[in-house]
Amino acid sequence: MGQKNYDYNKTVKIQTIKELMDLAVKEDGDKNAFEYRDNQDKEKINKVTYREFQNDTYYLGTALSMINMLNSHIAVIGDNSYEWLTVYLTILKSNGVIVPIDKELTSKEIINVLKSSDSEVLFYAEKYEQYIEEFRKELPKVKYFIGFQEKEENKNNLSYIQFKEKGKQEYLLGNTSYVDIEHENTNTLKMLVYTSGTTGDPKGVMLTEHNLISCVYYGLQVAEIGTKCLSVLPYHHTYEAVAGILVGLHKHVTICINDSLKNVLKNLQTFKPNYIYLVPAFTEVFYKNIWSNAKKTGKDKILKIMIPLSNALRKVGIDIRGILFKSIHQAFGGNLKEIICGGAPIRPEIGKFFNDIGVMLLNGYGISECSPLVSVNRPKFNDSSTVGVILPCCEVKIQDPNSDGDGEIWVKGDIVMMGYYKDPERTEKVLKNGWFNTEDYGKINKKGQLIINGRKKNVIVLSNGKNIYPEEIENYILRIPYVLETIVKPIKNEIGHEVALCAEVFLNTEKIEEMKIDNIEEQLKKDISKQTKELPTYKHITKVEIRKTEFNKTTTNKIKR
Image (cartoon, rainbow, N blue to C red; front, side, top):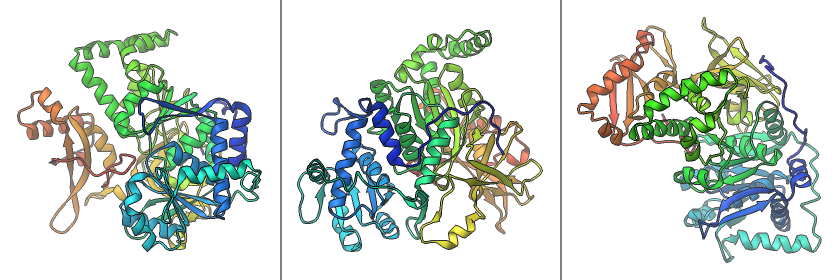
């Protein structure tokens, strides 16, 4: 249903993750695959080549073979790390199933996921050591607990370092049980991702190797990435694990592992990547910080003049954005040319701003059930009010569109999941004849670009029959410089009908002091009214609530509604 727009990028066709890694080593074995700060000495940067990384997966795979776990469901939990990635790629190249677990879950939620997923091995980071005895009692099916930071093995826990070392010695003695694995069927379960419902009834998305490879191959046909990235988003999330890591490995990119969210700007300076994957919340913070710093230093007026001047020069073939906006580029390390944004729609003005200053922002759309990429903007065909063109391996249809063309987004093709693990009822609700119901609302414009309006579960239906996507109004409110976070929710009358709208907001107190605002409630109401005046009356905010604390969020910085 989408449109090609210009020729697809040439991409090497592969069938398996093993083939992907073998090709990377053959063509670029001595190139750095990963760079990351040392666990002990944070000023030291460790570098691992593609060949060294491949060998580490051989050693770990051989060790798993020695305990007869190569065909098992193997879970991993922890902050982003090189060790996490060795487990991830090792299992993807085996006949087992990788189960990435959200690092923010409680111990009871982790137990639920491990039970539901039938995991028999758990690789874990240091902070989960305190729960291992509880896990052992509650999870008799988990035979091995392997700690990334464990130095010594004991009867309860294995040490990742020693475990991998045993595999290395066995491999060097000629044990090729792992290396010789052949994949006969790429349409069986390979990755089990839990997206929600972890407190009660976990929902596990079943992805095949064919799903993952399709996302990599067809994603690279439409998307263009650089040669070095900063890997920021959590690895348990398919956006980073597949569209970030696997795509990067197939392109032979150097992937720099971000050690902490608070260190993103510092690591941009250290590693100097030329592209990065982010979610809209990050771009929102970057955008507001740039304007805030410009105002503090008195450069905001100059910036407002330089942007249209630069755009006018570009129309006649003169591009000096690197010179005009040098200080902003230096704040991002000096080499950043591209931000690939996903997880939610972005405000179009943010996309335009980054593109105007010479950092191309490409917005895309995906969902875990689709491995996860469905569409993405292209460099020569970029419209930040859309989430881009649909991958060539899938179809998208708008189910039951209204008069504006808006309806439920359904997806069909090589990226669509097998279903939910051991849950035929939930599977049947969302999968119909190969079509997956994303439960997102949107439409396709005349150019073949997909537009997202909001989530089905978030839609507010007023008593007058009007449907409101709160995400749309929230984007208008976020234009206010001192608003950090917001959700729009319905106001109900005495019989439970949704009759009006309330904006709940979390504010930047420093910005309020800087702007010398005395009566913040009165000013906020005025500013919200000003920002939303172009919207129809039924979309106007009639009540405002100011929060004292941030909203609770997911690990990809989405507000939990």
